[in-house]
Image 1 (cartoon, one colour):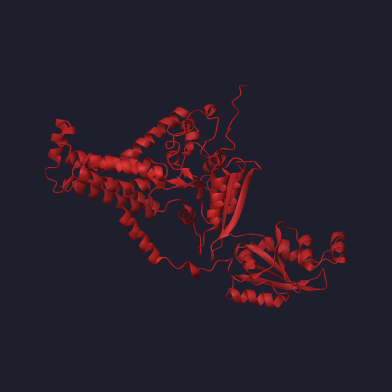
Image 2: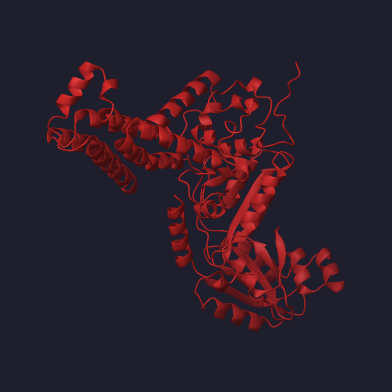
Length: 526
């Protein structure tokens, strides 16, 4: 294992580019705006390659000495109707009231006058070319004045966005039907609608030398662990990359352990799931351009919980969770147990069943391991084809392909009928796991256990389970043990792991999430 790790590290070091060649935004020279309007306009056009979607409108500002004004925005990113209504018309109309006259006679410069004249909020100063382009490409409009080395940016973001729809990856029968979209502002608003508390704090930064993607993280101040919040902030600020296009970039760049098949960060496209995590003391990370929001710290039992568990009775939720855990072990060990028993441990099979299995395998030319491997690989191909093809065609390929290929393989004597049954039950069990990324980890490790079973029988499976649990216990998610509350054992937090206690008994938050504000509800009698 040590040799394998050294080889991987050497390969990664060889392929990794030198960090000295990376040009961070903080190392780039800041080019300030000029006091000459035409110079600023030419710099903008030259920097962006005279792109035709950059709109520059120049005219005279009648409020003071016919000063030349330029309104700059990006077509399709800024709302042109709002630009005309709230910027162009007020600047061109020349309407003066007592307030404007006082501003002008007091000697205020044009830039300061714009903040009072324009009937919009969110007006901020812009003083350099880099900040100007960041604002324009974010959908804001820029107003520059001749004779001034600064301008103003106005948030009039436009363009069409996907409407709020039902989540496709986390469907529920009972519960909210709204899901996140690709707009970070919309996603943040969806969470704020559920938690109406001023202690819900938000911090934002831009990551990516080229994309300058807006990334924000949200937490309940006074409830979330300060060390976790500090760690999230530090890891995000340490990212040095040219672009962030999806939250998966962030997940891989800031996770605790690189070489593990298990996800140590939870993601969801449901606002209610993220709000519930925030109430427990977790930190949510939003990335512009994706409907999937990250939630940290994450623990192993969290990937077996569904949003619907908290919207129905505790006994029903407990039963469903037990079924999910059983399905997890079936999906992980189903084929390997069959291989081990039929290859090494015939004495564990009842005699009538052993005779039946022997009769079925009489014409099969392959050992049980090869037989299971062929069926598992075939099913993975069908599953991947079903995901990549259009929805209507993909479902037909998955269902019809599995039925036809399975029946044809049995009739041709390539595999036995019981192997088709085992692989089918294993596949169905893998679909029961609510978290898709945890299901992928199970599918990967299934092949490892199959190899151990073919080599050492049940002893190999036991050794594999020992290493499996050891690896899980070593994992951390932002300092929190991944196997909490199993390891270390915290009895008070077992109310919402496999068994879901009634709400009246869940009086406190998980200890490993929030030590400062443990109380979730009042325990005093009415």
